[in-house]
Length: 408
Image (cartoon, rainbow, N blue to C red; front, side, top):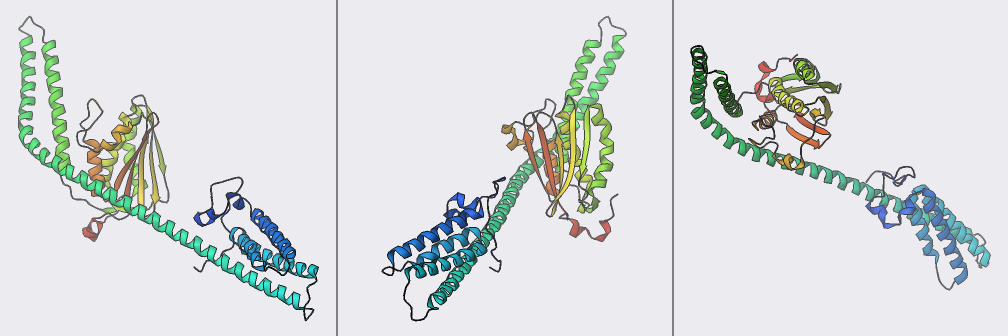
């Protein structure tokens, strides 16, 4: 309540991006377009009150009506305008008294009364200005607390979504452990026998009149499907494999620049141009660089696959409050809106040869690092995945000083 009220919030002619607040909406919008609008309206109202005072004489007291233009000018145009209108009202009242030639015991009485009215009007103007300032201060407080409440609600919603995904991941983990145990050994045996069968067919082809090409093609198809099953099993195993996080001071920009060198060739071969947009203000954070790159590499390869005819892949870093944001943006076909809610669902994929576990692994890694991931996509324009990382990893405090070696 200590803030002084100098000027209200006006809507500039060139830019109407600052509309009056709720307490200013009590008056028509045109009052707020220019300050002189309200001052002119107050002056006109003062003149009307003066004419009414002269017309009714002393039969009716209309002097309190002068408070209306004073309050109007102060509320809309500010304290200075209110003081000016207060002075004008006092002068108009004095002029009316002199025109009526009212009789007073002392000749200076009209002037002293006018001075008293000016003091009264000025006091009312000051009170209105303070009230206006208090209302704006209250509105600012309400807006700040509403924003904080919405932010907290968003954080809790993300936490609830993370909890539900963690529950689904627990189910996937149980299934994966059983699947890996039951399938891995028979799968290896099948692959070995396919290889031996291929060797036998090649050996028998020399003593037979039937060509071995068709048989070898079938075996290659069998082998490819076996490898696909193995890929799914390995992906499930990766989800249930709990690795201990090693939180170290990580220079994000330098680390990403070094790691991106290893994928430049792969991207260039696919006709994808890599763009790095690193914010120099991004400082050192506590995180596990190896796990972070594991998640980013999945996103980079997904982005490359989303641009089969080439395009541009942009890696961006920037700061936001107590977080560091790392974004992977592509210029591919985008993700249909109906698929957005299922991005992190295990085994959900739109790729012919996909397993539906890549983004699930990314989400798991980001959660382990104490961050969260978001996606923004527009069909025909591309997709942006953003990983938000805290400056301090949740496990950093428990690592101790021994594991905090500088990552270069």
